[in-house]
Image 1: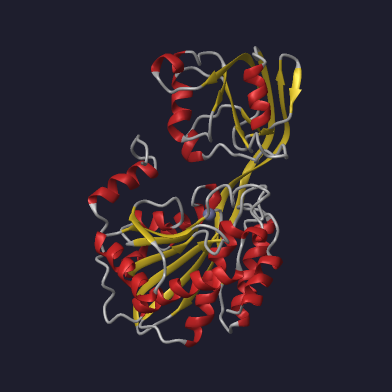
Image 2 (image 1 turned 90 degrees about the horizontal axis):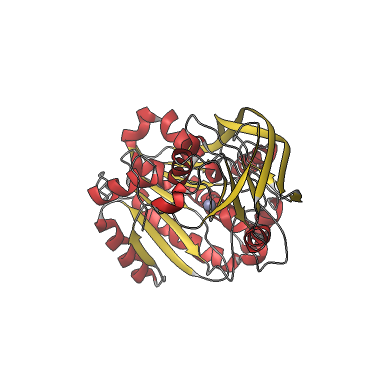
Length: 409
Ligand SMILES: [Zn+2]
């Protein structure tokens, strides 16, 4: 793919496209049209996702209204209670949550939510954005099903500057008003099959959705472009293994596209010998990594190959927070490629993730390395990666996928 084509795709897709939105559909159709330009017929595979329209979200602290966004899928409720800032997760701190509206650091994760419920919190406040940025942005958050299970607790998200002010000024009494319509909607994966000499397949994935404030150039139109690059290449180039390309929807909402794909294609899982996932490549700054959720030998292979090619890389064996994980969880050896920018040079999930942080030249170099790796695997007489997930990775998968309580590194 030429540099100008790479830049053009970033320009064409410079809009917000959250999972289940019409903009996500527009981007899916754009990817489909790109495939058609290469003479390839990609299909859309739909799956259901939870949706919500926030009708009212108000946060009153000691009678003063604080700008907020209501959590989607957190129910419709009005609560009023004392304020508590939960700084630590020890038993004493948790015991102070009873009957309070609790502010936490970071996002609302499964075990934090469970602890709040168990300790009698009646509402919650999260904050994001950055106190040192000029903007007062706050992301539109949702209380995911995997976090809340069958319970609901009203919550709002505020900007970090507001959060600091609440603590600094000694907030006492908090009222949250949350009203919303909740319903089921549709997201979709874009799927392209390129049959090879054998029915066994290598699945190539990258998500194309974004978060609520982000154009998602880096996270992750970059990986989506890499998939297009390989679709164009393998449309003509030989490949012994069948290749399946999946541009995943709703990754940012909890890997929903890749989870849907492995669920919808359960019968085909046994034919999948490898998953190669791209999530965030081609930025101006930062180091290239491979995260291998497979046997250690694959780490060595990628390292050796990178040295042969003269390509800088750091390889580790881990569970990566991206679409490779549902495949690994179903027993398909998986690896993710990414170029990780220092976060004072490019950040994600905010208004600053635009093509300004991207380099078409770096994109081309990263895509070439990934393409060469896939080419070797796709033309192997036999894919050398053992179709096993090692025990140390299984434990990490249990933690990441919330079957087991714990922290990942
Ligand atoms: Zn991503």
